[in-house]
Image (cartoon, rainbow, N blue to C red; front, top):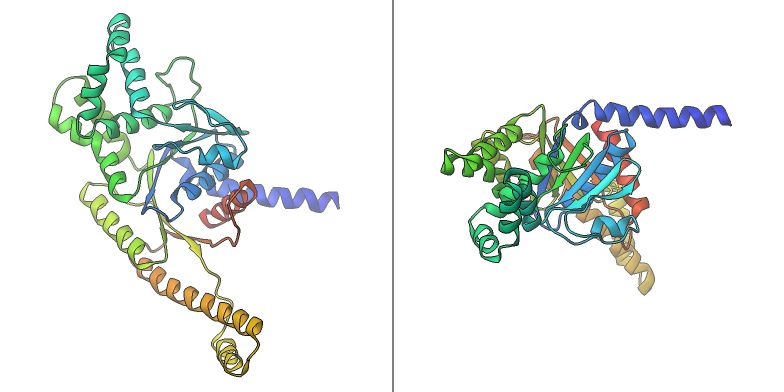
Length: 329
């Protein structure tokens, strides 16, 4: 029994390490997708998988909400606090104002930095500048991914997974460093923007992942996202089709159920058959939509099942992480 148990653990470990050899060899992963497709869930599942593989990983949210902490029964920490969720797994909520204050403390002489960070007028002006919030947030994500971090007494991470905003806003965040570099041209903002933009464009350092469901609008947005990234000199490294219904019925099974529905008069029996047929129709529609992604993303397409659970807690996230590791391998 012990030998088989050890063999099982070793086999599972091999799956995780094979996954590391593919996507998790990068230091920075951006996850985006249409709102409501499970983007944050997938980002956290990726983080769990990376942590299981031995990577010191942090999942960075660009919007607060505390979902990650709740899933691990952790307190909702302050914005900008790096919170330990599990061994090798951390999370942070990146708030633009806090990112600006940290940047000032690092780049500007002490008294001046303190004065600017406490100035409401300066803060309001900075936050009102178009694209500044996105630049500050992606700049903090870049800082987290550096082998030698500029933040005081901050330990480095092996991998940073950024849960971007929904597709349109997410593209704006990825573009912000290049945009500021081109507008400023010279000076510290231009230099920092150029450095971050170069890091995002470095395919050995950075990956971009799109999460979608197999529905018409999310699939359309994923295809449009791909085109926009290509125009910006970027690309998708993986597309994860989330919440796929299982295909449980064959054509013969469906015919039998339809015939049974016509002859069944009992309400509970009819309801059960109708649910089975509805689930089958949903799975068939999803398969058609997922097929639209096969050609443009050949070899980059992964899938995750729909979990029939009232809510996703840590056990369900661990299951999704295991499935992601297997598919990445």
